[in-house]
Image (cartoon, rainbow, N blue to C red; front, side, top):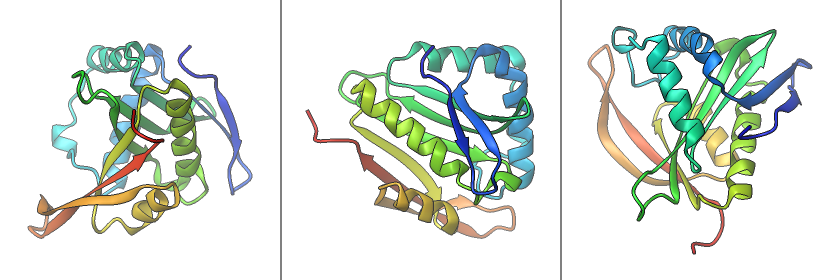
Length: 186
């Protein structure tokens, strides 16, 4: 197993399990993905573009599990996936000390500490593995709650792509690149 399960009690007094995803989570992750897309305006993928199959989802899970610098966590409550976090490590040797973080949480599970717990679990794993030195993420400039969470976890703005995201109503939003240096570079 890539990481031992972590049991956390959230601010709403509900206990959830954070664990590494396994291939049998493919259907639950697909279902959660549909829900995320329906609930969040901040995801880059649209519902029309979300067309992954179970075999593709299993292959994605397997690829992250087989990589020593990648991690896929799921947050589970009552046998349902309510959030997940992906750390996708770079494959090329000169940059494999970097990983890109992506996180999604069902609306009713936001603002109760689940994002904090998922990110803390991933950072702890990365520090123990000592393969990664830098975690990066992208965030909509208008997603103030997410930006506040990332800053609380130690991420700092590293750059901004102006007018990067085209919203359904035609407006453009900046993309912010944030990074967390896990410890001193090699």
